[in-house]
Image 1: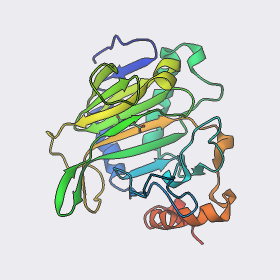
Image 2: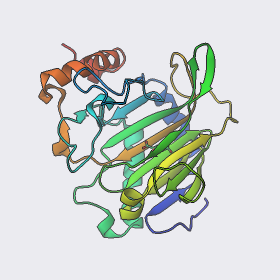
Image 3: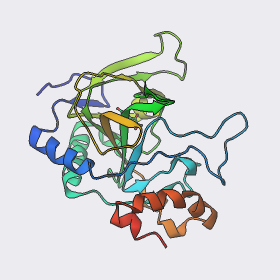
Length: 273
Ligand SMILES: O=C(O)CCC(=O)C(=O)O
């Protein structure tokens, strides 16, 4: 195993997942039906100068689902009606999460771990090519952003490796804003924690290689997946809402997604009227 010599607050481990566990995880991932979410909705319309659009990639959330049209979790102000209680982790994933929590607690200073911190939320991003006007277009990237959930974020990757960067600002001009670059390999774990890596700098995925040619994940219409990334995060339980506790108009906005999820997930099916 390659040991890293990264600054305080960063951890990288490759490989983190062995071949047997990888096969088990990928078998389970293939049973999911990721959503192509729209960024806005009837009750959260695009602000002036912005337009309604689909996200760049299909996603799946576990623990809590942060629907894009509910505007994502963004404390301290953006906490109301953002996070909807979602499916619990299957055992194969909970085992991984337990190990990541253990590593984070051992590896980072105590003050990097908020009280009650546990990785109770998981975003699964599917990276690849999208069919647009009859052409396959490479959409495998994520622009600069921060993950606002408090405490360490754990990131596990499968498939083609990704070129990941921490950057100082939102500007994409030149190279001066780059703080640190890393290749995130197949079956690797990255954890980032602490004020500098969580709050000060942004992170982004610049590109994903196209070498492995492995068939990954579920069939997604009009999309070919070549990398799957899991980010594990912490949302305080009091900020996670059962679907029925959302205001009716927001329940209406996400109803088509809940119905779609219910086609393959017993949890979501149980929430459909
Ligand atoms: O795909 C990755 O490595 C990073 C994903 C990410 O930045 C996010 O989910 O917030």
